[in-house]
Length: 543
Ligand code: GLN
Image (cartoon, rainbow, N blue to C red; front, side, top):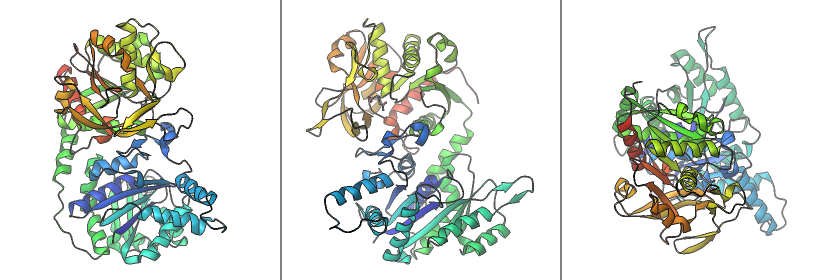
């Protein structure tokens, strides 16, 4: 039977529960165990797919086409395990499921209630779709004390009672602030947060204390005493310089050791921290840098392009370079300022996006990259912008646009009504917005002797998608005659997946999101190649 580890958070949000869970997953895996990580989100949205990146950061997409919380990206990058639809549940999903069953009469006329119906469904989700994992780590979103998270906390309390305390472990992550004025580390918020948790019936077994500074023994003793945990189970996590240091630091603090001890099991293998040590060294010591501009609508919020930022860093790691991201808000990018704003950059990237706002700035940036032979990478919406720019300026379709921005006679990018997946016909819609895009992993066939086939070193690839619009295949010949090659297509040859310019050192647009599959230990070839191209035109930038 699987052992369950529940990770809750207290005092404040954004303490790094996701990173802690992902690091623990890596450590347990490295010790020879099979691990699965899940996220339980207390908000009412069915999934984050329809939420603004300003609200919720990036929407992460899994191979099987789920739009999930960005923490699943951390999990994948650290553990190397591809997440699935069944790994992210929300209150919205649970409620819509229970209400559907109620309408179908499945509750046989009973009064449907939070306890037991909602909590039972949560428990079913926790156990659902497992494949003989030794450990299932479940992170509960939000902070203890939130009204919304109560059903989840109640469900995990019941779960532990049913599965047995020896098969479940509660980890609580809290903030231990440092007060500058009195030069003191304060444990009171942790005490209160644990008190709150205990009032719901959950006694944490391990407390991870996030702190700016190392926590002195006296304060650890205090936490141990007031929170009723062994002193060795009070684990500190002092801010790390790079996230890649997190598995090293948790191992040093013996988190994985304490977890195994709790479950009374031994390590099957010696932990391998070498890959993380190498990456940390590289990231911290590399002096040379390359300036890459990201032009998007959500650049103000760092988490909005989380996987992308990570993938670019991985591309830097592959080239022994620090990637300096210059975030440019597309709304304020006036076409006549482009030259000035992009003067010092060695690569231009336009990421995924939705809606018309800010598109003219993006199109002008594509034009600048194309004409000045600056490495250009267009991802999803970015590829669509590249195609529109090319249609306007090289094919002379002056009003070329996307039907996403309204009806037009010159939509070189149009709404997809249907497409095939593994021989099955799929249909799109623009009415119900949630979960109706072309989502998840799809195959693309690459044209021989193109830049893209050399980068992947393959003629068949699988990448993750999340979009509703598509470049119109009927323009293929016109584009190719002018030098923009459709170098990757869907297996039925109907959907353009990749475009590239013949006479440009590195100008590639992809309809998918390669950033979701890049991992620090295995950088994605497209990002390594893009950074390599940027490196070659770099003007000796030092950090
Ligand atoms: N808005 C575009 C579409 O739906 C692009 C989406 C994206 O970049 N993820 O096709």
